[in-house]
Image 1 (spheres, helix red, strand yellow):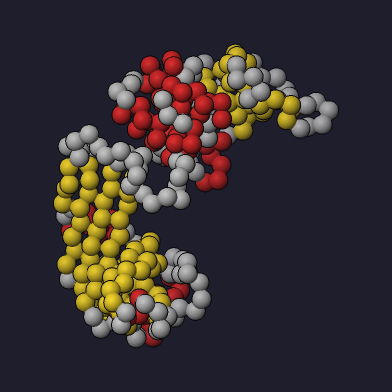
Image 2 (cartoon, rainbow, N blue to C red):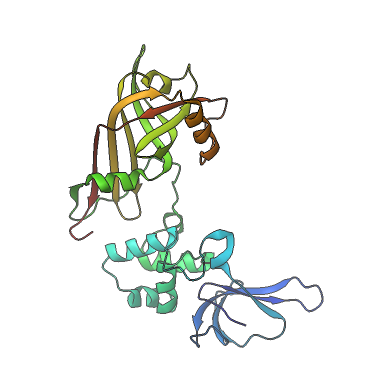
Length: 287
């Protein structure tokens, strides 16, 4: 039996095979992940040293649902990032935070650096230690507009280089196109891909995005990180044209990463060749 911090230790009933008791592994005593373990039981919230018997098995939380892959470096999940951001904002060390939350410093380090799924009891303790709420650590209010968090203590507005702008445009995603329509200016989101540095999206001939054809338009993508009070935006300006070559249309349709989230039939491909590409990000010195 081998385990990682954050895994669940499940004790099964010898008669039914159902879970009789489970708890979060918050402490390891051997580097190879073999027993014994420090386990915080979900039914009592107490931490005990456990030598698992034949009726116990480990549930590897961090490798489920494709959230992490063995052999990859640290990839913090949203909860861990919020915990770390709030801890740093208050100037607290991991050791002090772990002491206040009655958990192991190694487990707090794991939680901040990996996509973990802590129990409600652990979240309650962490929220109390950090003077915040479980809802805040879980990202409550995700349906609200981004950017409602506190600003950085010493924010800086930094310019992105053309290469950094291209990297953030990436290969596909959701961006916003600004067009002029008979009813006035409009900004609408579209699913897009980037092919050979050209922005391409699919729409319907009678839609608002189709009004971009034959005009110089602005196309914008951005990202707001409420947990760290950071963000960036990239603006591309250039002419929009209908993609008419049958071979190109076929290749785009076959290789599209996703269908339009808006649904419906959208067979008209529009390309934007950026003539100007600029971007900004909010950070601090050294970030």
